[in-house]
Image (tube, helix red, strand yellow):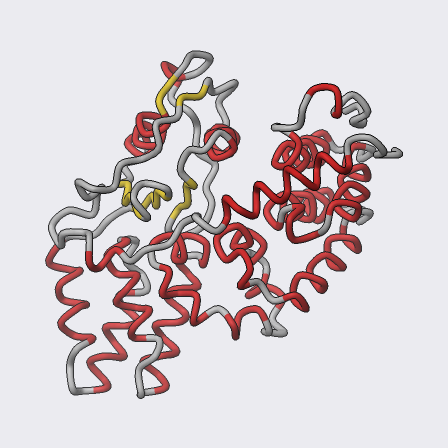
Length: 313
């Protein structure tokens, strides 16, 4: 591949993407989300975006929604393979309706944050459970706070996120540790989408030698923007390069997925194009598809005359 005429245009697209990142997800649920309602507060109005889901894969539909200016969708507890309800496929559907319909299909609730720019899907807990965690974390007894931090880390309710973020800074080391473990279990991308206060806790995650702990961090790239560690980005790009030629399909799929999550704005245009080209030559269909998605993140808005030299899939 010799990306000659379309590379400058990609640079323009990347600049636009970086501008969009600055207004990305964040915000704190604690001040806007009523204790008895983990759903959308009145002022959190999702962007008015309509898409046509082209299949059953809800993750692909959510990515398309985001590319068109819709909300960023995250799941408390980590990504899941959701299906688009059959009656919403292959026809125009409003983004808010799509997100809430997928959530309802799996008996999940939706917490809309950052004035509707983010949607956090979560199982939800009873008001009594949430209030008990809140009260116990305020106890003067460190043992009570430790147990509450542990218990809160297992609740899949977005209202607990700000409570655990605060507990992760507790003067008692075990309280802080339990809260941090609980936040990791909820998945950092969903935690950060729910409450931007989590930014302060991520420095240690970026520098951690634990590969498993760093595995999901590429998905935070668009949420953190310029806060990403340059050294960490360099290390992760090297990791992606090493795994793309792996024999194991799952290793290559993971590398291709992380490439799309990390984004061209963080990898660099030339490097990203070279890595994406390698995914197009992969024998695994899913790897090729993930490579196409990575390219679509920055190439979808390019003028037609400048995209004529894009590599064939």
